[in-house]
Length: 213
Ligand SMILES: Nc1nc2c(ncn2[C@@H]2O[C@H](COP(=O)(O)OP(=O)(O)OP(=O)(O)O)[C@@H](O)[C@H]2O)c(=O)[nH]1
Ligand SMILES: [Mg+2]
Image 1: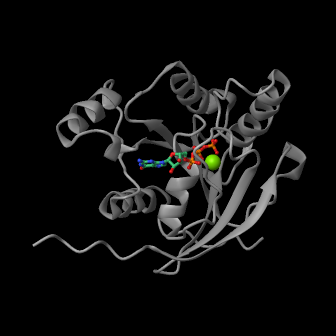
Image 2: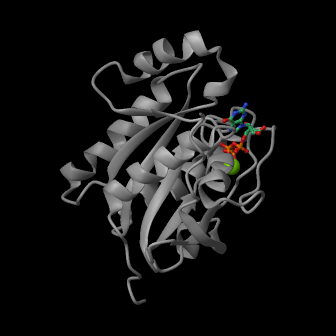
């Protein structure tokens, strides 16, 4: 018998704030989990799946959909509270240089300077694997320690598993994991993969409570 899909972990989820420049970043109200990756990799789609909501985060088949940092307040079934943070994608070549610099200014400042940021989920398309941009991003986050701050935990998620035939999924995931990194494979059409990701996120951030801000 096929196991039933896990119960959704998110009890409620709502949009709480958007920032288009560092000065607009809202005060943190809970532990934050950010989703970073190339444009079109599936960040906003994955957030909707985790929050069990169809269209709370805007998605599009055209890269460059999310242009601001968007914050979502999520309550979990066991009483935890956390913020999910949808970052604009990088590597979107059609954008003007000034716009790319604006991304770097906003997203890098957020990723490197946010004390409440506990976990960065780095998304990679399972068919592309980790490329120079992803490796740069991982190094940048890991180097937070060198600047005397606590680095957030990192979790690599390989997206769009369903785009590969089953026989190719394992080798593709192993290629992303080469170098000893732990990788989660997900497909938004596969609720079990979303449930497993939720458990890993909660394993990192614990049962978070509001910061009381
Ligand atoms: N087949 C398949 N398609 C997916 C999956 N996840 C996302 N997509 C598709 O990928 C496209 C991009 O998804 P988004 O969630 O908007 O991507 P994003 O990373 O937020 O993109 P930006 O906001 O531009 O940075 C959409 O057409 C989604 O339907 C998946 O697991 N499987
Ligand atoms: Mg998006």
